[in-house]
Image (cartoon, rainbow, N blue to C red):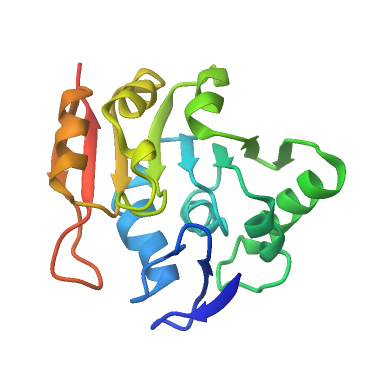
Length: 213
């Protein structure tokens, strides 16, 4: 797995199997904050429940923890190779030492839950389409961050968005970097109201999807 420095000096990796980068080349840290944590205004909810779907290097969760003092975050990931990379890098987030401790505990001991003060992190390791069915909590916010739709189309289906929506609170919000027409159409068919997200590092916007009643 090749390490790459993005334009904001944060690190990402290139996945040879997916033939895709884990983050935008315009800035991995910027993407985590601006397209996900800040875009969803996660600090507008006290002690939010967050799903980080395709956890990767944990940047989206780290950005969230830099903005809130309490949260329950379910971290969906299926690749231990990228989790091991977390232990090799020093990402520029205030909370990244917590991310490292959480991941190290999971990799070393197989313990899924990690608590510190008012933060609770839960590793949901495996196929996110299956693991999401095991979650009892309803999410206030979802960071939806798989590889691109043309690389892993099975992650961007109407059926998966329905499964996610069923585990969200009404008016809960989902963020994703993609604005592809079929992605937005699938979100709409799954019961979401779709809006433009911020324009960061490219000409087209990201996407915010709101779980409608």
